[in-house]
Length: 105
Image (cartoon, rainbow, N blue to C red; front, side):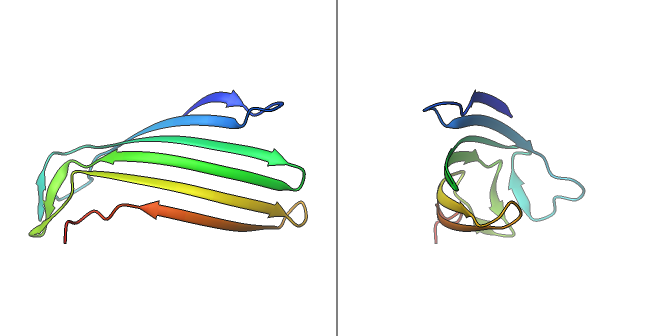
């Protein structure tokens, strides 16, 4: 995780993360490569008792088939959310998540 901006003044807090995922144990049923790679850009901006969030991610999957089911090799996803802080310990969050399916059919 790399924090690009810390969210002071007019700028939102911005972070970029890179994730590598490798299987543990037996890979029976999986065909293709070994390591999934994901890149994620996230933003957050507080305004009073409200906080806005946005995120976009791209994942490149290693496996192209799992137990005979063909898979897309890549996936895009995005998230938008608004949080309202009720108290210091409680919040209400409304979020919308978009994610591409991982299988063609």
